[in-house]
Every structure is written in structure tokens, then in C-alpha cells.
Length: 294
DNA sequence: GGTAGACCTGGACGC
DNA sequence: GCGTCCAGGTCTACC
Image (cartoon, rainbow, N blue to C red; front, side, top):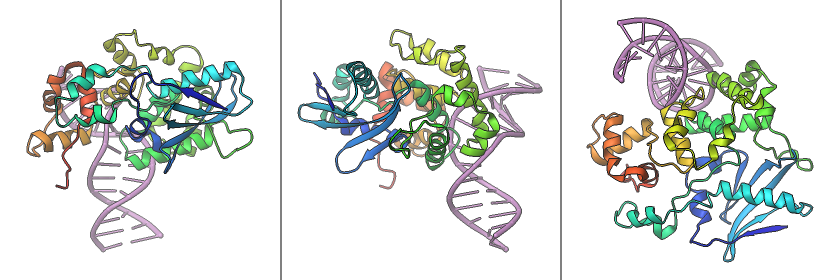
């Protein structure tokens, strides 16, 4: 069974797939050679399924199990549109980008959308697992998290969905630490899952694009394990570009781009992007950085 | 508001 | 093979 998403403006699946490293993290699976991906997730009913997303001249095509009913299809369509940042309008950004040589490739390639997971819970957990570790560490922790706590596909048990808050809330810190090697991050993720599962915290409501960015940032910073860098990264995923995710890599490349490689702090990074106003986060994310090996 | 130290893991390195 | 050091953000206590 196929769902066809017809884009009304230029859209590049290839660009969004390569917008950041999420495609390398379970339960995403990049299908090499076809510029497509598969993703294992759950319906609201709890059923685990795997969808496949590819691009054809007619639009974005989502492959689903044949027995899915109309309601299931509507749910999947909404999920995929969220993951592909389908409704974000980048026309104003492209107009700005066209005037800057380091950004001119974006309108040409219709880049600028950033791949999201199906749930904000998944994106928050993954973002926490990018902090204070190497990228290989993030890949390892996410894979172990999915392998040990994600629900498996009924006919292909090797395929697992990302664990839901409910899946995690019932475990304990010791099990999380032992089975996933999350280290000191384990209690943060356990607390988040328990707060969501108990109804104390409605994380998914933060997908609402009517919430002011400053308020959204405050809500994200209130999550243990989410600091300024993680909050800014999550705001980028949510389509809010007013903040810069400044990590050690940012300090390095911004220094090399504008400060002759001298040691800099967050203020210098902010200053470098100040002129881009509310688009600064997106400008930073897609800036064509000078090759460090040149 | 700013700062120092602890947190945890895996990888690099020296022996 | 073993021990040590380091890198990576955030939290907490303290000033």
C-alpha cells in the first residue's frame, strides 16, 4: 500500500535525509542507493510497523502494510508530514540565503528542513544522548536503548520501534544503566519518561507552533539533561531558529571561519550570526563551512 | 550571574 | 592487557 504526498513547493527528500545525523540512529534505516529510508514506529493502537519513504516525480511516497485501514493511513500521513517538516515555509529564508554565497546552495537544493523523529520524546531522548559524548557513543546508546526497550515488529522481531515513555517508565535506573550504558543520563531519561507516562508533563504539546519560542525554550530547559545546547538543538527541530546550538564543535568552526582560529566563547559565536535575526539557527546549521583541511 | 567540580563512557595512548 | 588521560554538555553547590 502506498500513500502519495504531493508537494506544492519544491521538496528534496535527499536534503532532509542528510540534514543531520538522525538518519544514522535507530530506528531510522537509510536505504543506500535509493535516497530513501525506512523507519519502525508504532500506531496509536500500539501496533509496531515499518514504513518506507522515498521520492518519485509525483511526490513523496510512503509504503505501508497492505492491511492498514483508512484511519491508520491518516495517522501515518500525519506522522510522516511531521517527520519531514512538511508544513514549514522556507520561502523568506531562501530569499535571504540567495544573497549569501555560503547559503546559496540551499534554495538551489531546496535544503533547510531538518529530519525529525515521530515523537518529540524520541527527539528529546536522542538529543540528550548527543550531549557530553562522541557521535559513535550516541549511535551506540540509541541502538542499545531501542534494542532493549523498544517493542518489536510482530513478523520481523529484529525490527524495533523507539521505546515509548510507557516502555521506559516501568523500568529502573539500574536496568537502564546496565543494559544501555547511558551513564549519568539514565536518571534524566527515566524521570522524563515517568513524568510523561504519569500525565505530569505533556511533552508532545510542545509541537504546537503557536507557543512562543522563548516559552518553548523555557519548557525544554526544565527537562533534566537538557541545557542550552540541547534546547537550541531541539528548537531547530521544532522549526524555531532564534537560538544557536553552541557546542565545542561550534566554537571550533566559528573560530576558524571568522576569528583566525583563536579561542572564542559563546558571545563571539552569537555575534557572528547576529545579523541573521530569527533565522540565525538555520543559517548556522546549513552554513557552508570552509573545509578545515584546506 | 559566574564558576568549579562531578558525572559516565569509550577511545587513544603509553607501558 | 592494563592503567591513565581526555573529550563531550549539564547539574549542583558555592561565591
